[in-house]
Structures are given as structure tokens and as C-alpha cells.
Length: 170
Image 1 (cartoon, rainbow, N blue to C red):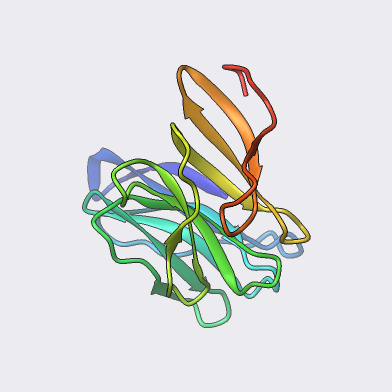
Image 2 (tube, rainbow, N blue to C red):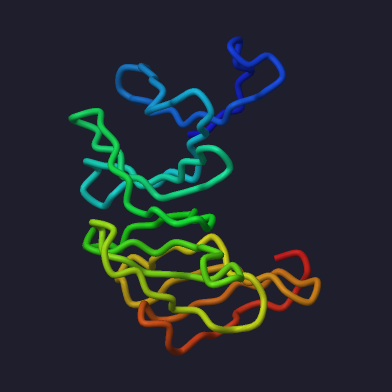
């Protein structure tokens, strides 16, 4: 889970930290932190051994994988754009995320190792909060544009986009 916490080292700043909470023991720990970084938008891998998350450092946000057993993170994206909202495919082999690397906030799919990122959304508006369906045949997302928030789905290749709702409250 994520939490805003005042940082005594930086009294005028508030850091966003991501915690790992063990339900059985009640133990909680900060996954990782650095002096000017914030971790957010964390999601477990299907096997539960790692966590994909966004880490903002110096105003730039990239995707990282946190290995739970080894307590180490690996940076997957290294782009001047804002890369965020990672979500694993059910087989753990791919990750969908949103990024403004193409100039506008769109959806991208890459390998779970960070390779081969390719854009899959091309509609008008900004795409966000992607998540894989349990079967892996669709990606759900929100699309913002024209004063509306819409919920939609598309295939992992970007085809068959369908907007399921049409309301400013979605």
C-alpha cells in the first residue's frame, strides 16, 4: 500500500512510500526509498515474488521491479517521459503501463524484463490505469478526454478498442 509521510530530513516535503504488509505477521516495511524519490502505483506479479512499481526521482518517473526475496529493485524503463501504472500480464511475461513518451499519455506493453516497449493505444484523449484481464486477452483502462472519463478495453496488441462507459463520473 502507499502512504504519504512527512520526512524529517525534508520538513517541507512529503514523500510517497510504498509498504509491503505481511498479513500473517502484521509486519510492514518500506520497499525502497531514496532521498528525493517516491514509489507508487505498485502491483504484485502473478507468482507473488516481485512487485512492479513506479519510482519518481528528480521529477522523472520510471518503472521498476522489486524482488521481494532479495530486497532489490531493477529499473525497467529509462526514459525522460513519465512511465507509470505498471500491471503484469497473468503469465508474468509482459507489463502494460502508461507513458507520455509519445507526447501524450498512452498505453504501452513491454516484456517483464523491460525490453520491447511498444505503444498500443492511439485514440484521442489520455489513457491511464491499465490492468490485464485474468485470462490475459484484454487490457482494461480509463480514457480521459472531452471532459469525460471513460472505461474501456482493448486487446494486448491494441486492437478492438471498446469504450464501455460514457460519463464524466467514470
